Image (cartoon, rainbow, N blue to C red; front, side, top):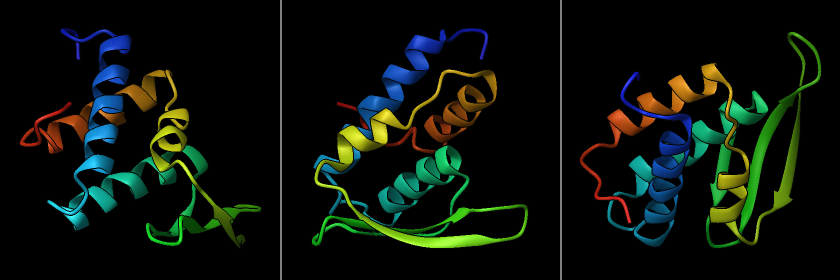
Length: 109
């Protein structure tokens, strides 16, 4: 990660998110996994399901160490929502770099 600045990693991941939303039908499961991974990282959520047609997200949020509560919310702009979930801390940046390496076959916008 020494060759990449935090800004470059975040920008590259934002490009990948935009690309994955615009081209979701190309690799639907792979891109859905990407979206869920970002939400899982940001919210520490479990059992994430994204309904792209209804524009809703179902997930379980932690209430304590072992208790989760299920919520569903409307997400009209998934692209901006996922980009807003990106954090700039060291642990998150390592996670994002791993995501970018995993999706390196995708041509970013």
